[in-house]
Image (cartoon, rainbow, N blue to C red; front, side, top):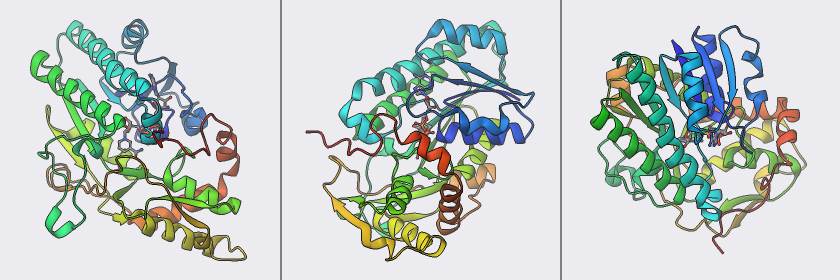
Length: 350
Ligand SMILES: NC(=O)c1ccc[n+]([C@@H]2O[C@H](COP(=O)([O-])OP(=O)(O)OC[C@H]3O[C@@H](n4cnc5c(N)ncnc54)[C@H](O)[C@@H]3O)[C@@H](O)[C@H]2O)c1
């Protein structure tokens, strides 16, 4: 397939681009190159014959029309977004502009292109979203359950509200105009090329720097952790085999409290790069994020039973690979540490 991937210079988008090229697809990577982007993430495929890069903003309709006409994609995989919850608390406007208005412009450009081509049913608009649209679960996996595709939307942060809005737009463009869409909502990703403001790289890099490792509140918040390469594999499965109009929850079957996750990373580092003291001694509890959702958990039954997809690694295996990657790729993360806001406490809401 020829895939138009938005946000392909970001963390998850770049994993999709690398995997798609390895699988023999053609890729047009459309990215505005915001603070969160890094073209080194796709360096391994930059010279591949099936790869093209277009620097463009998804809010720029004229640029999108030109890109659709020039590349004639078979499918869109839409990952471009503002993605950091803490930044959405400090500055929600960009989240509304990119995640809501950007998705609107991309849908309109895709619809015009699809209609011009005679409305082929084989076309796909795959919207990549998050489990955060469902809100927060109670603490007990036995009694409080997991998110299914039928869980009502209940977003609580500016980020998750903007993603929920974009999901609604995508469903509406299917119902109203017949655009052949699929949606996915996935849990927290981690893995290589994760921007150094997100929890897993923050823990690794603070530990290596001998600095306090910040944990919000008491570290009791629970997330389901998904290795980014497993996520890329799931997304490529859904864009090819997913049923039109349907959404799929994607999880790693790896629920963990933040404090457990942080302690596991510290223990892996103790093995791989022993210091004078255990890295866990650097853990420091800090003021919680306002409106911090307590627990997210994914029921992955639909994608597993209908499309035969399962995650390939456990959390321990994925963290082991991730820590090793950060130890081996110091040049990559050092170059990003000077970017605006990185290393600062964001999202305290005054
Ligand atoms: N990271 C996670 O754990 C996670 C979990 C669930 C869902 N998601 C979703 O997956 C997608 C990718 O997340 P990520 O973590 O890779 O994000 P990221 O922040 O690492 O990358 C986002 C990319 O989008 C680009 N971008 C931002 N605004 C743009 C615009 N206006 N026009 C064009 N490009 C723009 C950026 O330059 C960057 O390359 C997002 O839609 C996010 O909501 C992420």
